[in-house]
Amino acid sequence: MSTIRVLAGTRKGAFILTSDGKREKWDVSGPHFAGWEMYHLKGSPVDPNRIYASQTSGWFGQIIQRSDDGGKTWHQPGTPPGEPAAPGPPKSASNKFAYDTAAAPLTTHQWYDGTQHPWEFKRVWHLEPSLTDPDTVYAGVEDAGLFRSTDGGENWRELPGLRGHGTGPKWQPGAGGMCLHTIILDPKNPKRIYIAISAAGAFRTDDGGATWKPINKGLRSQYIPDPNAEVGHCVHHIAMHPQRPGTLFMQKHWDVMRSDDAGDNWKEVSGNLPTDFGFVIDVHAHQPETIYVVPIKSDSEHFPLDGQLRVFRSRTGGNEWEALTKGLPQKDCYVNVLRDAMAVDSLDKCGIYFGTTGGQIYASSDAGDSWNPIVRDLPAVLSIEVQTIS
Amino acid sequence: MIRIVLPFHLRTLAHVGSELTLEVEAPITQRSVLDALEALYPMLRGAIRDHDTLQRRPFLRFFACEEDLSHESADAPLPDAVTSGKEPFIIIGAIAGG
Image 1 (spheres, helix red, strand yellow):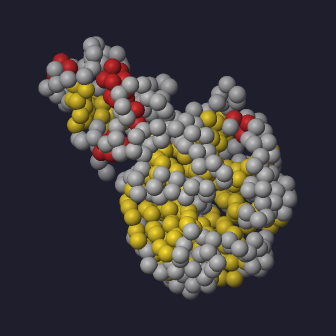
Image 2 (cartoon, rainbow over the protein chains, first blue to last red):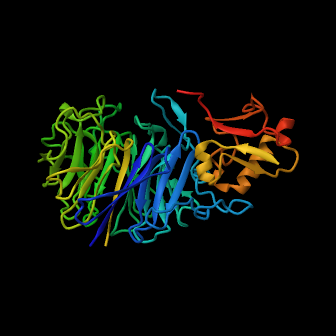
Image 3 (cartoon, each protein chain N blue to C red):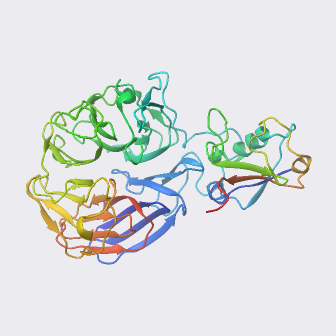
């Protein structure tokens, strides 16, 4: 029987929740890295026991952790597990994220007040392991940049073509910072990668990361001077079904969007959603036209409408949405669901999982028809990933 | 022998207890002590000082002998009580309370 492993990053540590394929009883392990902000954990698709984690702190900076045994033990890449490194010069710098200023000089970006501001590394928001090599992993960072390690996280090199695209001075931080938070690797075209930045928009490379183009045509954002600008849009998250890598679904700051031409053009599919502000969006594991969002009241009020936590599902790729409420609190609920805090498993009856800023992780083992909390009282959940292990 | 006290989160990173000791060659300064610390515990590189500039991270402070040495020169000699091992060199997260 399959094992389901939910990887949860929270404001105060990481948690690993494990169940069998029934997804009824859950074992909770953690907190790992107690007291640290764990922005994201994700396992390698080709070696599920290889898990990468972003551990971060305003005091102590960025740390990368790696597990090679499914999250039982962890170590900083390049450092022997569980022990201090041997004396001598450091053999690696797994926590060093240096922008490649030789290839792309650091520019400034737009600050909240419209002035220009220096580019500074702050943290890793998202880790995306390669689809084919467990030692290769991408990191999306704040201030926005894309890094790659090919040695299991020991050393990181920027892919400077993105930051060097030339529009950097027009990028600006969203409320959470100027973060590169979404990385999608095309399973059918290893040269193609999609990324998204708040608030710059979505970008695509078709040459393995050397050059990038903004893919924001069709997005419209009232909070920038030119609502149809090439860059400056606050894209909150993008999702793709691996069988249809040319179709993308986007939760923008406001508006749910879709593209059927690899991001070249977008159209709005918010349809009958009660509000189209939100953060997460995901796609059913087996039905490429079934998508999920969690509408949030507004950009000023980051909680569900009317205190009702509702997941909305569209079986038509957008426009027509149904509210999923069974098992979710329908009064006095004022949590948020952050951009990386929803994931799906790949069992026959697709499981959907999301975490809240109130510390609950909800799971559905029937594609969203009904929900149960796996845990209720974790620290605020920053990210959720799910592994389906045969 | 130099005694060093790390904040909780750096202890867990380095897998050490609340206080550790280091042999450091003279001159005993913030820089030489931190160089020795990072050489023995490379996982702390970047967590106390910037990788490249070696500037103290802004939310960390260096205390010793009931004095705040955070803004002293990295190459200034540390107090005799630190070099003799009588007093520890304390690395601490900024913010006194809250």
